[in-house]
Length: 371
Image 1 (cartoon, rainbow, N blue to C red):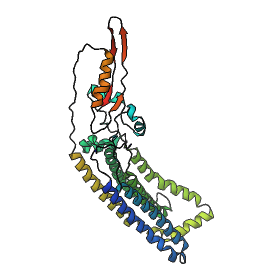
Image 2: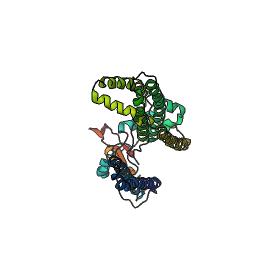
Image 3: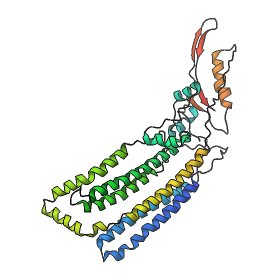
Image 4: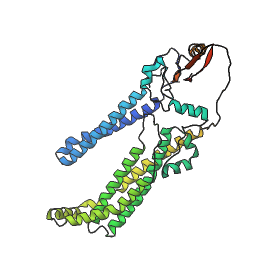
């Protein structure tokens, strides 16, 4: 948003200060967690260089993510500049005094949308959800349709991640059945640990994408369908069989056969996926509870109004049309300001005068201004 200084304060304080503090604390903790494996690299180099490189990579990733979160959190705690241009315009602003400011704004509506809502007594803000998951969420929480788009999208992402988690667990059970019953061939015992690792990584990525905070104003409702879930089920059934066939085909080569034999005799089967899986599910449950409580408190404040604020009047006066437009533009609208905030002109006044002889003729014009 643009910042235009005004002597009158709007009384808007920094709404991101508390969030910035929590983000800075999180960044500090993650940075400390990243420093610990980096300190262990020196002692591990002499023992196992591969393990040392793994510790170094994990440490650098944690340290980079922690410093990024720490910096963004501190930036959110700084002064929040609120000028006369807050809040942003509903539609493109054509006011001559706000030309530069209007270029920085990203309005949601157009002037024709505002005209349809004012004259047609309708609201285009409440968009119908699309997709199976989206409709299910709005069915369970009817007031969700009245919330802002970012909150609606967050609820849909959370529900989609929750259903994707359940489907992934069912898919993993199907994968384990295919591998343990011998449908994947003799290599099923080495495919199951691989898919266990894929399950944990998939759950982490799914919940990370669902919990991403978007700071830009979201102008549309996302679609959450069941096509993604069908792909997961198909992958769970076909992937072990196809990989087993591919490995059996590659077993005809001596090098691949020796590598598979080494994997079968190694401790790969003892890969414990349950601790990582329980940890992911624990954090999933915690985040789900917090999101549910916050959305419940927000929906409790919703009071959808269907009334229309409208005033219609007729005025008859024996004056020249130019005087009418000059009076509206320079006297009436110029004095209608609140705390020095400039008027927003969504449709410029373009009068169409058809002058004729003997003081006859016709005129028309439209103007749309927010005061």
